Amino acid sequence: MLSSINENVVRNNTLLTDFYELTMANGYFELGKQNEIAYFDMFFRKVPDEGGFAIMAGLEQLIKYMMNLKFTEEDISFLKSKGCFSDAFLEYLRNFKFECDVWAIPEGTPVFPGEPLVTVRGPIIQAQLIETFLLLTINHQTLIATKTNRIVRAAQGRSVMEFGTRRAQGSSAAMLGARAAYIGGAVGTACTMAEREFGIPALGTMAHSWVQTFDSEYEAFSKFAELYPDNCVLLVDTYDVIKSGMPNAIRVFKEKKPSKMGVRIDSGDMTYLSRIARKMLDDEGLQDCSIVASNSFDEYIIRGVVNEGACIDSFGVGERLITAKSQPVFGGVYKMAAIEKDGKIIPKIKVSENPEKLTNPGYKKLYRIVDKNTGKALADVIALADEKVPEGEPFEIFDPEHIWKRKLMENYECQELQVRIFDKGNLVYDMPSLEDIKAFCKDEIEILWSEIKRFENPHRYYVDLSSELWHLKQNLLSKHSRVNKEE
Image (cartoon, rainbow, N blue to C red):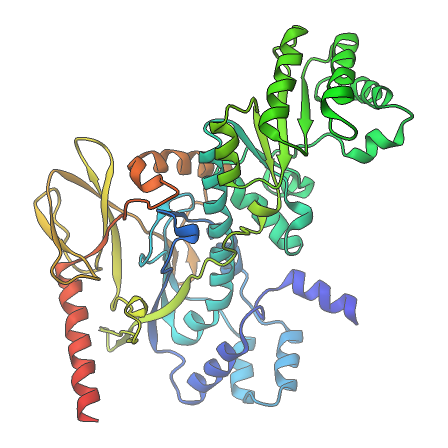
């Protein structure tokens, strides 16, 4: 029985949803609301690690999930056994067909708090049902892509390899974490299956156990060089880096002459050991030999050893990358923005005593304003979908947090960030290759000012509201306040 359940989970993720999505769906159906059209936005409120920006990732997996949404007979039988769903609703699920419109920001795009990363329009049952999977896949991969990019930027041009498979929270997190890390700038992964599934280069050479298996460190290195002359990276810290590891590695390199050679240091003072190792290699004419460092690295430790003058060519980063250890939750949310009645869009707003939890109402579009002189991004603007955004003409944008702050935009280009993914359930988006997403991400980060990329106290990048959206939000807040007073 357990085997069949596991096979079903792999085959079909439709029930990978919070149970209340289904109880609400049953309620909508029983009340005759199943065909009412709703609009939802997925957005986040805070960049992890108090950073300046995040990197959108996970869209491809979300698309595949939406393409395969269906309730199997096993699903229907299970739900029937719960005893809380009507037979008519279960029959509705048996004939379920995804028919929503979906817009999303492409993977690899730098994104900021408050922006609609994904917008869904469709029958309320359908738009509500996908919430859980949408959040889990975008939240997870965006988190790992963002963390990886911080680490990559700290390495200042040195390669970063994702080495966290064995420390990930489960097999899916290992696989999809490797994918997100690649988008964020990692050059490869330790996860072999990630290369098979996604084409991400699988990297790695030996563990300490290889060295311990042989009677001597020299023999271990020599046999490895014979087996892998095109990728001979020797782990030199099993016993002593300076006294035995490096001398034995140098001896093997000179005897076997591998076409590609390197040493890996996995413990100790990385700055000190790498500098000594570099000198020992150079003194023997082995300037082409690279030095790889692996241990419990994050962006701050890497930045520290780089600034100290460590002679490290590439970093292998494990647990602190694949788990985003410093802040392992992204915190994206999925909120209703409007409903549609008789073809008219009726904006909805969520009000909270916490100002950061106020939502932006209505069906919206997102634009990036780029300075024509510098090519740098100035701000993002959220506007109502039917609102005419000026093409190059001066216009005002409003700070959603401070009603007195306005900014006049001049001499700019306006780029719409969201693209259409589904049209009434039909896929209309050409999914780019992972290599194209990775290259796109690198290019898009270049249009951000360096002040936004700082690790400490990054400059705030403004996500403002258009005039019409700002006034709509204020009117809804005023209306809500009046209703509360009357009650």
